[in-house]
Image (cartoon, chains in turn brown, yellow):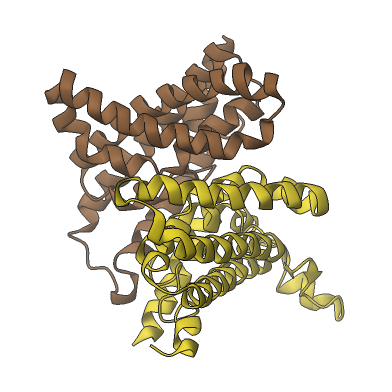
Length: 191
Length: 203
């Protein structure tokens, strides 16, 4: 039950993109086609869960015992950057099919603030490891959901006659705003 | 390019928010009021300025292959400094900006300027570039914060903008502020219209 609350809260109520504003750059950048946005969501889910596990262990078994909690930002970003590199190398070797599908999105993830954001939030919220993993996975699913829905809308927007000044980023932001309004309807489901 | 142009290009012509559309996460998340937006802008300006200067100074000594990780370490160092200083001297602002202070590290503007400008220009030019981009970023965040605060709370920098007298003015025209503008959807909508207005007047 506890886990269910975490999952629903992370996917719908506090959606990582539409309510917490994490990972807006890929949200606007790769949301013009459903297929690419699905690939991106897969890669983010994979890295986010892995990064959360590694950073959680580092924080609790290295940084805290040594009393250097203030090194969090530096350590986490380095871990995520090298993790992404490693995942890329391993995938290339072990599963070329998966690499084909996720490969081009992996380098982009280093600067995806949702990954670092979720890793820090797991520490801030005092989750244990299992809760942290559940939270990370649910956040990634929430990210994927928002991304795929926006991509679906934008594919149709291509056919619409958008005013000149609104073309590109503004109309995407406006669509995201309306999407965020819809997601506000979920507020109050949990706590 | 002249030194003055180096400084001013970030403010309007290459404004990181309105023209380059970079660094959207802090832009949307921290502009629920003009003050928060300005605080975030100034914090980012400091990081941008310092990392630009340091990176342009050491770029010659860094092997090309480990360039990006090295830049990230430099940037993360300055972000940690900002994080600790704000926690000590601006606790209230620190609490309202929350997780977005450590997230300056993944702000595309900072790494973008390091990669696109600081590593191939002189220290002084990089300083001007960082300062100009920082001012442009702060300007955009303060503007967005002001618009959202005015619409969503009828105030700017915490000061009410609707006069108390005459009584009927408030009752008839300005009954309730549009609360949604200080919430999440308002951020997207307000920024969308600001960029659209900016595009309209660009040329």
